[in-house]
Image (cartoon, rainbow, N blue to C red):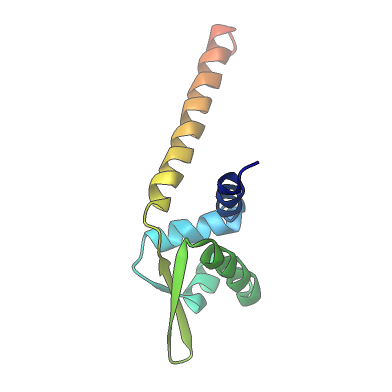
Length: 108
């Protein structure tokens, strides 16, 4: 298998966790978010949120900056929003298809 595909898989795997997808959604809505705000919003421990942010940062999706003792994260790869929209579209199309299939079978 080519290195290009392994690298792509590595980047995509960074999104393959519900918490990281929720973090991406939060960051897409704001310019920058403090880790402390993210912890409060997600209801997770700081170590868990930091771990997930680190994975997203290492994959190139987010970047961080320090202001005193606070660490702020923001989206680095704006295109991730389009990728998430694509995933949501696939889910919607699949749901519509399943719904039509059930209606076609007389199940309502």
